[in-house]
Length: 279
Image 1 (cartoon, rainbow, N blue to C red):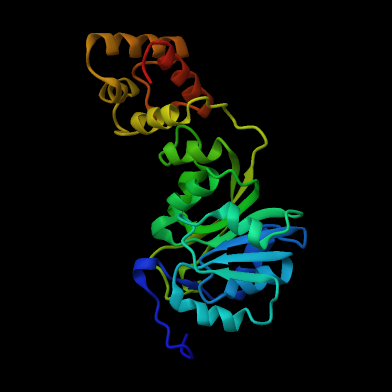
Image 2: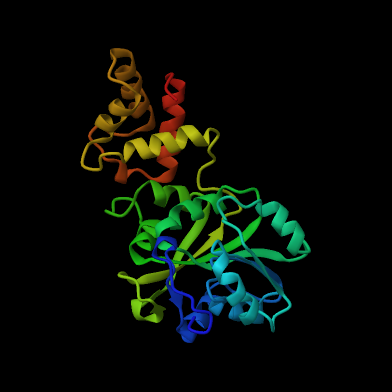
């Protein structure tokens, strides 16, 4: 960073991981081998990229900050199996980039130290792609990791828990002290590993309707699911009657709170809401 006169940009969430022991543990947590092609998001100065290159068949690193490209060109020069693209992962044509850099003969994994300010959008973007991703290993804020792994009836359980856990098994591999970064962030971090499920916990026919229901049910956590659904679907007598019937048919008490419902119970509730004319 001194050599290139580079200064971190706070608006891009640039906190560079410099603890080599942690870098090695991230690659181990992702079970990265020569059978894998790896997508890295936000390589920064290439610290994690080097360790990935030493283990993976091929690494595709997406870096949004063009001023880091000269740094990466130097740090990645010894690694012919690393390709760096100046791309925003949320806007990039990932299938095209994969076709360009990967041979289609290896597992595709994502391993990254995600910018904390945009962790959730990136994660949901990856889970929503048509790419056959074998696994995702990412560093994120410890608090967000708690929400991803939260179980029903816990304070951290919410719409993010449901969205991720429906399609992946989630585990926290280990936590990372803030002093492992330059500059040090204001929070501690965690390495989270997502193993993609072959079959979702609940088959969702109408994903948009399901997402609407779940987010609406958690809109006001202290309120009952009845109150949240009335706010979501309407206060007319017909809407209230439909909500009441849907809850009864799904076996959900009107005084229950959203955090008490499992993924399967939310899916069942959505189906009953649709049967009663609510989408």
